[in-house]
Length: 261
Image 1 (spheres, rainbow, N blue to C red):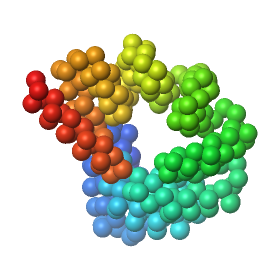
Image 2: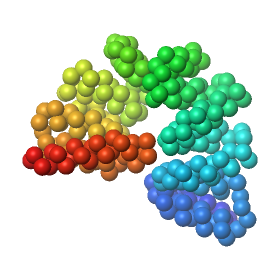
Image 3: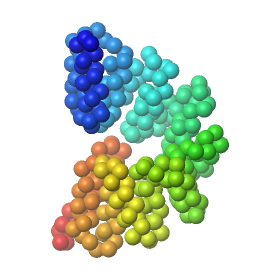
């Protein structure tokens, strides 16, 4: 194993351990020390995403995707980064390009639906999710997303059915438990909502929005100390640029609760 391979191995191990910044440092140094390599840049793009450096990640991934057009995972990463950066048109083009070359990539269809959903285009979003489920009835990603549309449009029973089907397919998926937590919270069942939030956090201690919902649950019950803890955990774990406004709201809420304590 040569020095370059050793560095790649160290970077991959760092990513597996959640040390994305260390992986970025290793890969950047490697790219400076030896001839440019597209596979190394692809791994750097992944590390930059994990480290939250989305602008830089988008620039790296743009060049890598052009050189490795058949690597769909890289294209998904690029589309997701565009989405996180608030560039839905660019994200759409990436997902549409994937589908034009491989219509069986159902996750790309669901991702298109997510863009419609966040633009409050519920009919278009639902159409994407249902098309994905026609292709793959066991797509938990599509079921989660369809459940969100149903919940947003007042079809609670259908939403719960989607979330429970998704949970049955992926019982260890924290998102499945969180979706049920949101369902129960919206229906004022705080006990079940808390249980589901705690299960999501147990499966993924970095699940920021599970902390946010749990904080709201405690706040509704006037358990201020517990709610403050959860809101602080949300801010600790939520680093997405797309969440900037909600993070500001949570910071203001914390300040208000502290003043009233």
